[in-house]
Length: 210
Ligand code: URA
Image (cartoon, rainbow, N blue to C red; front, side, top):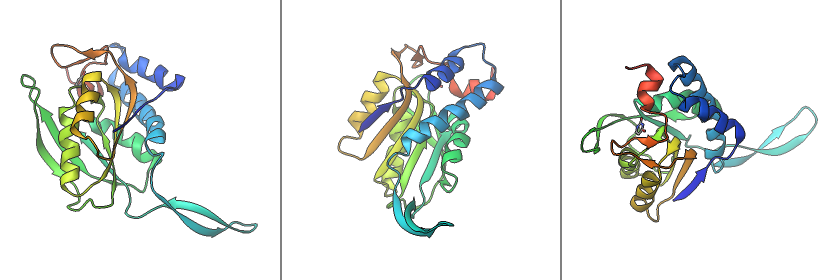
């Protein structure tokens, strides 16, 4: 697994506003979108391209364009939906699939309650969106799901990660082609499975649930 923790003052600034408990959902949503666009730039560093010959108004030249099959973006419902706009802003030609995962608040174990993904992911570069990498349970289940459909190249984009979650994903994906892009690596998980200092429940913050 490759781990990339973003280091950029704009990312840290936007994350600081997201973390603030007084930031309202409307601001939270638009900042999350901006933040993901910045993270998407990093996450797509290895997106596959192929050479193409084109004509400019002045001459012919060789450039690159995204290869087929198109990348697949997979937001994990519900909170990952808040990251979708930011990602497809940079990858407008990507296909979007959905994976609904829920974790039991007591056992913290994830289960899949919905999926809408292509049957065959052979050769697809997959970008999983999940704002909070806490225990890693949902993300590992999502990666396993994509691998079971033939994916071999998975990049996960998270706003925040806990060291426990990063270690769990690393252990579960040994030898696999998995990249983790984080906005920040936080201190730890608390006894309720929340990231500390974190930003609280990302789904609640995005959608104003009280
Ligand atoms: N999920 C969240 O939304 N927040 C956390 O801190 C951990 C998991």
